[in-house]
Image 1 (cartoon, rainbow, N blue to C red):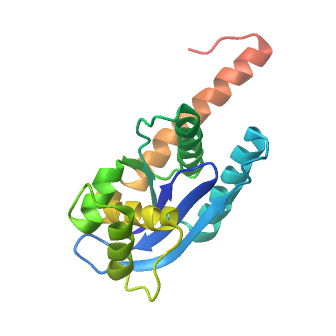
Image 2: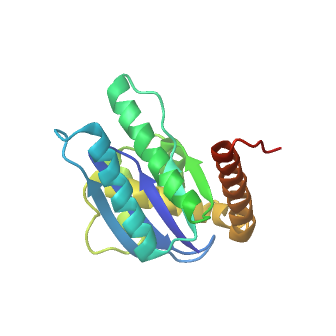
Length: 191
């Protein structure tokens, strides 16, 4: 199973893709960071994140996407940008009919280190070992994205729901929305 992990962020959005199965050896497929310029217009930064994630999904063809669940932070501006980037990743996956799972930072940390309170250095060290990498993924956003993907694979999340069942629900929702919009344009109603 090929899983894309996304550590959402507006300035740096980590993206990591691994292949594996519960109880099997993992293989690194890709790791990178989608970056935007902090001084750019907010909408353009969101567009940059979207284009980067969309391009990676098209190129790498994951079978599932694991996104870090946004948690409350003291800086509302930061949490808003993080949540928006997470939404972009989920939307890009839904467009492709891919199952999406949200994992908390402590779930991902526990999956790779055995400790839900591990620091970034511990997570990076374990991700490097688990994937048998010669060098640690940098920056920490990249390692966090890989930890999310590993967490998803090891928890068997990629196996919980067949992708075709998820796609069917997405396609049905898209069809209903198209009908609703068409009826609105023509003045009709849709039940």
